[in-house]
Amino acid sequence: MLFLLIRPVLLAALRDRLLLALPLFMAAAAAMASFISYASLTEQQEMRAAVAGGSVRLIVVAGLVLFVVFHVRRSFDSREVEMLLSRPISRSTYVLACMAAFGALALLMALVAVAVVAMVAAPSPLGLALWGVSLVMELWVMAAAALFFSLSLPTATVSALVCGGFYVLARMIGVVLGAAHMGDPMRILHLADRIMDYVAVVVPRLDLFGQSSWLVYGYHGGAGEAPLWLLVVHGVGYVTLLVAAAVVDLRRREF
Amino acid sequence: MSAQLREWRWPSLLVAAFILQVAIAWNTRFTQPDWAGVPPVPSMASARIMSGGDGETFFRMQGFGMQNLGDEGGRMHPLYTYDMARVARWLRLIDQFSPASDYMPFLAGYLYSYVQKVELLRPLIDYLADVSDRRPATGWRWGVVGSYLAKHRLNDVNLALDLSYRLAALPNQDPLVPVWLRQMPAYALADVGKKEAARDVMAAIIESSKDMQPMETWGMKEFLRRLDEKTEDTGRTPEEK
View 1 (tube, chains in turn yellow, brown):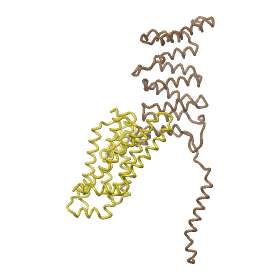
View 2 (view 1 turned 120 degrees about the horizontal axis):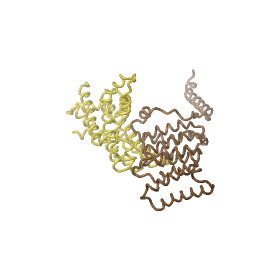
View 3 (view 1 turned 45 degrees about the vertical axis):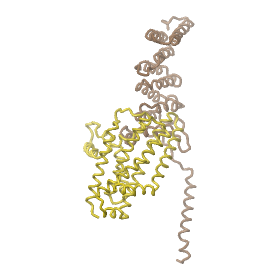
View 4 (view 1 turned 180 degrees about the horizontal axis):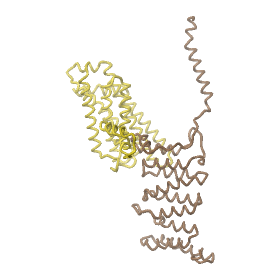
């Protein structure tokens, strides 16, 4: 049953040319990184790896989020969801099937991203492997967030904007927490600092994922770098949280 | 309004708007954004927020921006018009996002050091010396570049001497800094006329470095011999110097 529900999502990705467009954009970004690196006065290899890694990550996150959001909203608008739920399929099965399909797409796109970066930048195998695994986790988190927001919010535009804000906040939450804990007794924004502490409880630490420095210097496990097992546990745990929230929200909805 | 006029209303508007667009483009063809000089340096917290959680990519892109600073939009600006103190602060800030990289010291030592007004070199030399102090094992050569700039471009032998003392005092880490770095104060002292002090420094190195290559030891002894020759040429003893 789960596979029967996954198949239409994958077909939609093919129909939307996502599987063609994203690799093409990634290749273009890698070519641009290569071009910029040749204009760099020194450390061209490092420039290529960092810029290719950073831009490819942004492209694949943006592409996946937009696909998830518009696909889910389109399914609602065309009454496809109502038709599916009128059959003996539970709402939780529907959400799980969607997540499995988006997760498979994310995995595929992450593999393409790793291949593209490996081709243009030739980073250290360990650094690239770590970057790739953490990118898969990051994409799963963002796919789950896009699924949750598009199921909860009324329009695709609003969902996409909220996902964008969520991603920016999640990538910056480490810096925000650092600023909040500066330890300056004269800080007048003490209340704001405490608010950020509470916000950080529900925001994933995506700033620890997909670091381009791993592509340049490899992984050293220094300060500010989380071990791989923690990234995997954090990623899987947060996806579980978002999927559960999406199921609870969908169960309460009346069609 | 006749039907014929209504039919031509939108095409006419289209043509009029197109003509307006061409006129504006023609008029503004030489209006280009002006370069307001080296921009103010943000705080570290602001820079970290701007990095979007990926410091390395931010470092590379900002470094590329520093490499092309002032040379955008088909226009070039001479380096002496730059606020070099601000450039050095930018380099220090960006450097913190990838402390092991040589990109920023490279820009200071081999790009901005070509500034036409040599007095503007001071903040850059200071930055290069700091890089050398911060990571002696891999960054000592930037201290040497700073010392070279101080002596040969700025013609400030006292600053060069200070820098050579800083270089000689670098801790020996893995990989080891070369012995000639320890010799730099001797050369700098000889330059400022303190030949006896130069002799002492070099003699102390020969005494303390027993595992040196024979050619290296010979080179240092040769330096001492030439120092003696110069002293004899002038007909004065080292003490009189």
